[in-house]
Length: 206
Image 1 (cartoon, rainbow, N blue to C red):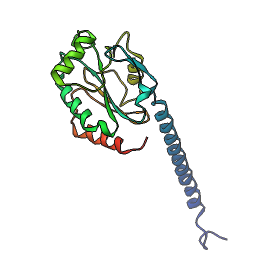
Image 2: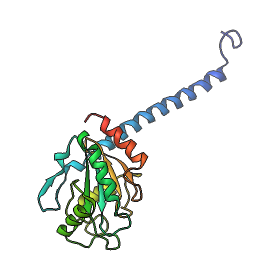
Image 3: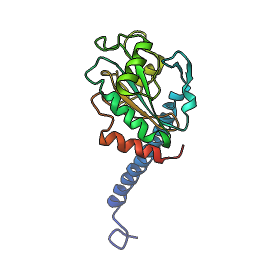
Image 4: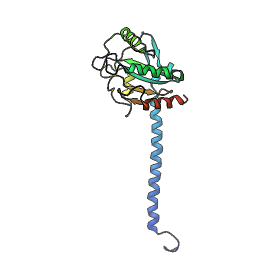
């Protein structure tokens, strides 16, 4: 059949092929990206593999929190953000029956704002803010001697990874132990974005 007698010009046919190839390449790239995201999410489910000491010295396997949503917070008693203890306890009390726990990790890494012993920290939290959520022994969250849990947290890809900025940085962990969000130290425990994400995770099945 001659060109112009019903068949598209050859130039047009030649132009269609690259467009189809580009679309196919884009589709393959999208599938590969989705597979990579899935693999990354699985790699991030490490939180429940750790065992740490509670503030009373007893051992705590974080695997016992499997099926719960967790908020990990490095805390300090002499910081301008220390009043966040009150909001953290309120959040814990409000959602604990739905499978939520705040885990507090005292740290003296920022301006020496957590100098006390475990006993002093526990007494302060209890007497000043009525803290009942699980508290752990003092650990290091930055620099030399950084605890392995925080090595993993800070080693995650952006936007979750990166060094801890200050006391009261927060990591939200889903029921499978995957770290799904980070909130900077100044984000209040009752922040609308934090609470919204928390409620979404609580609504999910483990």
